Length: 292
Ligand code: GUN
Picture 1 (cartoon, helix red, strand yellow):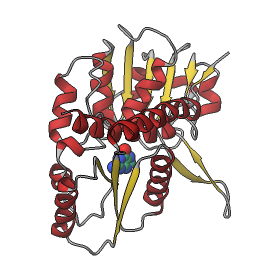
Picture 2: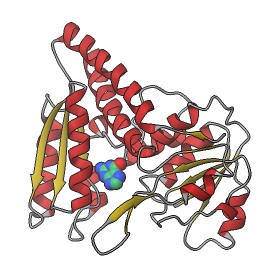
Picture 3: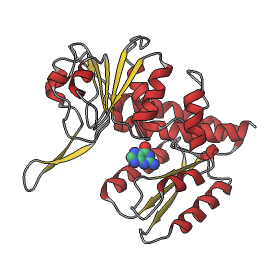
C-alpha cells in the first residue's frame, strides 16, 4: 500500500498547535502576531494564494494587514510601503506575493524587507543563515514550501540520512532551499533542471524525489525507483476540454503511485503545508520580538 502524504491533515495539526500558542501569547503579552500581505496586480493564481494565506492567518488568530496594489505603481512606491511596514510595530511578518509584474526588480524588493520580518525567508540574510545553520534551529525563517515538504517527509518516520535526494527545479523559492534542508538531514542531494542531461536516469536513482519544475505530470512511472518517496510541489492548471480545467502536479500521480512508497497528492499535499509554514514564520518573528 502506498502511503499518501496528506498535507491538509498535517497542516491542520500545525495550525491547531499554532492557534494554541498564539492564544498563550495573547494571554501573556496582550499581543497577537501581525502579517502584512502585499499583492501587486491581479494575476488570478496570486489572488487565490493570497486569499488562502489571509484566511488561514485569520483562522489561527494572526492579524492580517492587506495591501493590494495596482500594477501601475512604481518600484519606489513599493519600497516605501515595505519600509513603512518594516517600522510598524504591529507587523511581525511581511509577505510580498511573487511573481511581481515584469516592470519590478524583484530581488531589490525582497532585499528591502527587514530580515526579522521576512515571512518567506527570501532575504539574502535568511538564505545565508539557512545554508550555515545547524539542523533543527527553531528560530530560522525558512522558505515555506521547502520547509513544508520537509515536515511532510518527517511524517513518514523514515530516517532521511544517507538517502539519495533528487530535486527537479533550481528556483530560489523551492529547489535551492530544499537542497539546503535535505543536506542538513544528511541526504546526498542532486538538483536537476531544464538543461540536465539524462534527467530521467538521475530521477530514477532517487530515494526521495522532489518535483518543483512547473511542468504538468512531467514525472512518469519509468522516472521513479520502486519504493521511492515522491513530493510533488507543482500546481499546474490544465484544460480538460473547452469548458473545464483541473489542477495537476509535476508528477503523474496515478502512474507513480503504483511504484512509490509514499507520495504527496496535488491538490492537498504541499500546498496547505506552505501556508501553515508561513503562519509559523510569522509566529516565530513575533515571539522573538516579545522575548527580547
Ligand atoms: N509565489 C509562489 N510561491 C510563493 C511563496 O512561497 N511566497 C511568495 N511570496 N510568493 C510565492
